[in-house]
Length: 439
Image 1: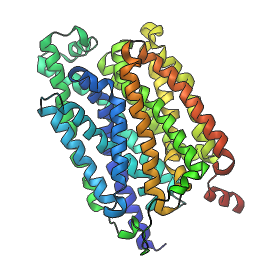
Image 2 (image 1 turned 30 degrees about the vertical axis):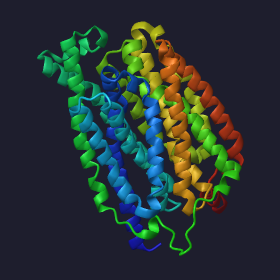
Image 3 (image 1 turned 90 degrees about the vertical axis):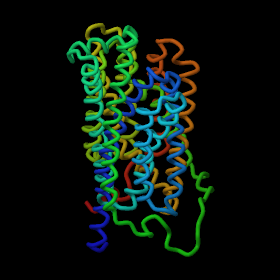
Image 4 (image 1 turned 135 degrees about the horizontal axis):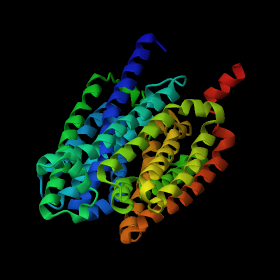
């Protein structure tokens, strides 16, 4: 590859990474501040949050299909605009219908970057640096989530204290029992959430800037051949292509039962105050940063498939500690915090593999469409999880704990399926095999 082209690849890769950091901030706010805000203003939307995750993933996957026509840059620029519109809408439009619509816009905007990531970074990396770039993109995105969740709860408490003209310590103590707030207190608490959401609309605007410098050419996203090729549905007869869709769908179903509700579960059902809840979740995201950063070293030791399946299995015991958080009494914050740290770190350590591995199953021109199919599979099970949580699981307070047991069973099934199917052929990528032969 020519040096000039390599520089363009690096510029485009790192522009995505920088913008993705800001998207990490926005994702952190969506999974923390937005969820607890919705608990107060639109309970049905909050209880179906995982369903909205599914809807947004479905929409983002559909939008990705436009990549061969408009390129990745246009799609990436559209994502922050959706988030801005959603955040401004929930802050200023007091109409019941706006909350589910705005939630969908915010989640679609943040999810669109996740959907773009695999084909985009595959297009702008070489086999030699691909794993490193994927890992860097994901751990820096998680770092953004760490910052947002760490300060999200504190920002709410600070704004609540300012609005009520009380001390931060008093505001934090009051936030431990939202159900006991007076109507005026609750109104100011909701407005404090709106203040924080508006702050992050500015962050969404900043995330646009790096992509203004992306240098894109038509061959990056479109086949140069005059013959136009559609999606080859026959690839679904390939067991590796099909089983990965099943695997990803299972993982997304399990994650959708617990991930959107960390804040609600810890604050309302384990009894941990709002600011501490945000800090515990941010610590867990920090675990994701650490574990994802060392992903290349883990892969080098045990291979990509064993890492992907094995790390998921290793996270299950920690989910059991979280599910039984109340049993630890005044030690709950410490025990649950540590369990969250390791559960999140282990599950996210192999995220670069989950994004790059399926790109090995199909040819270059089919990557955007196949990646859309993967995300659609996950979206469908997220929607199913949303209906399941709202219609059955969360009818009782114990449902938030039961969700962890169900997720553990789903993760076990998915991981065994992955290990049995892919270990022999795909545990070592073709590049790694060549390096080992050369050595």
